[in-house]
Image 1 (cartoon, rainbow, N blue to C red):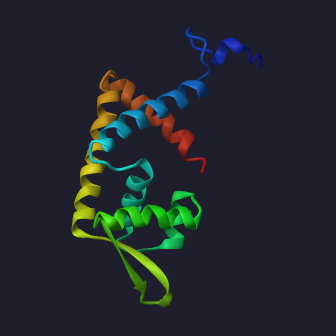
Image 2: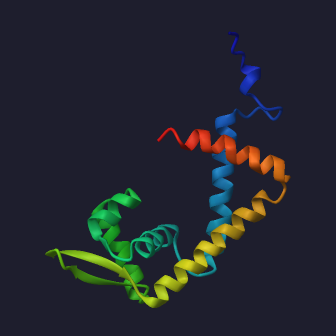
Image 3: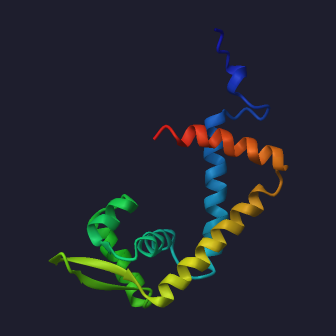
Length: 147
């Protein structure tokens, strides 16, 4: 087994892991631009997505899902609540706990943002042939399925 540098180096000199990070960043950037059009920060968009998916989610669970401190989650929810995109309710199972639920406008914006993310991604991937796309999906699946 001879693992030479030339195996994982592309002609441009970037390693496979560099290229994967660069691809993720460029996707995030193009999605970020489409979100800015709706005046939503990336963390607000992520929070809205989690809340819309769950229908009702505890603040502590939301913080965990976003991998941020509960205090930061509170700030994000405050900003979304100010714009009437989410509402706070007390958790029926535990009156002391607060649940975050999407409003109708929040659910609608969530769908719009999902669509924006999809089309931003589609645009980036449009340079690939069907075969290349299938191959990329197969390879990424292998990487992702280790979790």
